[in-house]
Length: 425
Image (cartoon, rainbow, N blue to C red):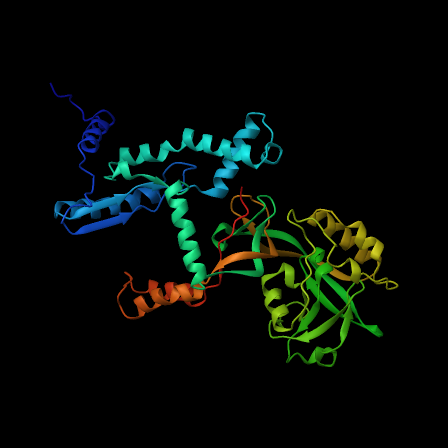
């Protein structure tokens, strides 16, 4: 006798199990039928599906079932992604909740064993959810992005792209997460509005004791790594200073005053400090003017003076090597407070004012990211983007609605080298 009400929780799993066990979702590589394949965008093994997954997988399932009914040999390839950063965070959190030592105390080998153990315990959540959605995936072919076969494929593709010049090593700035201790991509960075101060600092002009140039900054702690002051080429206020040197407060090093269009005459004082190793815009200015690029913050965003120690000089009323050396090892924000206090004591702080601006944070670590100058692996995104651009320009690929082409072209034509390195265990 039929129940009066439909109970999907009782009926659907039984129906799905029947479909799956009968091989209804399986492809047949030996078949003469025309193939149709969709690779599932692998959901992260760290969590559960969300509404975006449900939408994507429903669309793919519709396409697969349609082609299957047309007699095509269909493969909807299932799999999950290792989600390195998120997985590392989850396992570290589990260890902490259980009162265990952290990963550094465990050591790399023991920690990786624990990650695999966690994956075995938690990795089935997503596949169970996909089955409850009725997704007609070819389950016997399920893969994991860190399994042996795919790891071999990754190495093969990496070497191939390297030999083609599409993967290369370079020393550039990356988004560095001081908490997670790894480079992260632009997509893993979120800007948060922060209330802080804008400090106006006087940089004395070398050999002209009565003159100075004032720069405004929200990050006085990075001034230890300044290698220039930039002014706009057409800013007549500073025309006679271009080519001269300023004395870097606290450090005592002479740094050039350069003309560069990056400096905005309408913004702040019109003069900007250039710290090539700790700011993406400054890095480009540094390359244009062949400036030194000393790093003054370490992996954990603590002051490190190793690369500037030999440049420290004592300048009466301006710089004291002893003070700078006392900052070594200090957290960036503690160093900021100490530097501001020292600038005030030396009467080099012209003024400070309340300021609201957006500060990039790591979307997982939750702390402000640091632009960090390191040697990493990059994909040549500019070259890789060309076929995609051409496909849209020629109409081979079409956007609906069409105006999304503008967003696509803005991304593709201004694309930057893609950092593919991660410093994960």
